[in-house]
Length: 136
Image (cartoon, rainbow, N blue to C red; front, side, top):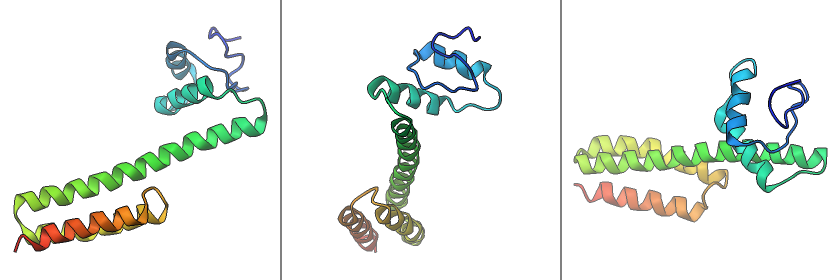
């Protein structure tokens, strides 16, 4: 038996809601590397959505994983746009063009996966290209 309330067995991996402190305790006793962010997300999902079936628990786990992946893509998208804007402000048109070329691919990939709308992607690419063109 474990000392954590609501955690009956490490092997069982029960999906009951934990307090923030018990999640940290859990991360310290489980073997291997544990992603604390994933545990906190699991805690958050279980607080809002109490799954009553195995299928619903699985869907909750899948939603958490998909949310983490989509957040990563969205962050990559924002970073690429920020880098282009920084290159434009630096005033070097050739460097800005090169950074824009890389960012354009990132923007298109994110739009293809429906993380952002395709029109939003086109609008960002158009405005960045216009800003680079106006540097000359």
